[in-house]
Length: 180
Image 1 (cartoon, rainbow, N blue to C red):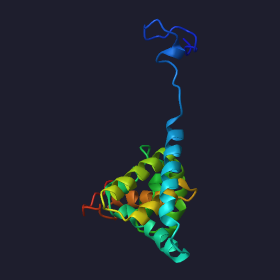
Image 2: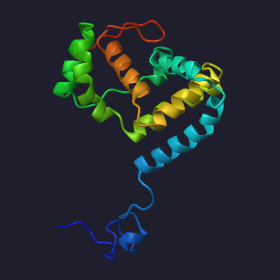
Image 3: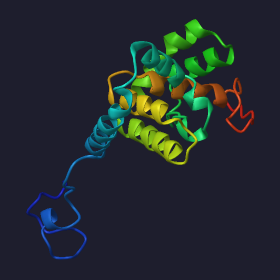
Image 4: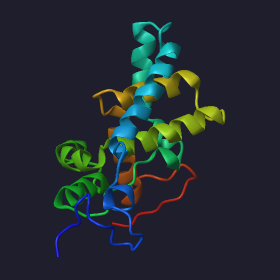
C-alpha cells in the first residue's frame, strides 16, 4: 500500500483529510528553525564584539578552542553510527597524533556539524553565559562563530568529545571515561 496523499482520508480514523490531520507535516524544518535561531542569537551577540580590536578578536577566537573543556554541555555528542572515519579519529585521538586527527576529522565533522547540533551548542553557550559561568564576550564570539561558516567551536567540541570518549582527556568534572 502506498503513502497516503494529501486529500485522502487520514489513516488515524479521524475522518479528516491527511492534509488537515496527522499525515502532513507543515511549517519550517528543524534545520531551518535551528538556522533562524543561530542567526538571531549571533546578530544580538555581535553587538558585544563591535568595540573589540583585531588583537582582542584573535585572542577571543583562540579561546574558543578551549571552551569545550569547561562544561559537558559544550561537548558535541558523537554520531550514533560508528563509521570508519569515527574509528580512525578515535584511534588518532587515543594516540594523541595531531596529524592523524586532522586527517580523520573532516569525515566525522561532516556528519556531526549540522544546524541542529550548532543550535544545541549555542543554547549551551547561552545557558552558561546567563548563569555567569561564561564571559559575555567569549559567549558572543562563540555564538557568532556558530552562525558563520567557520567550524572552530564545532571542531573543538567534537575533538574534546572524542578525547573524553577514548580516555585521552578528562571530563570537566575530572572523570576519565574511556570507552572505545
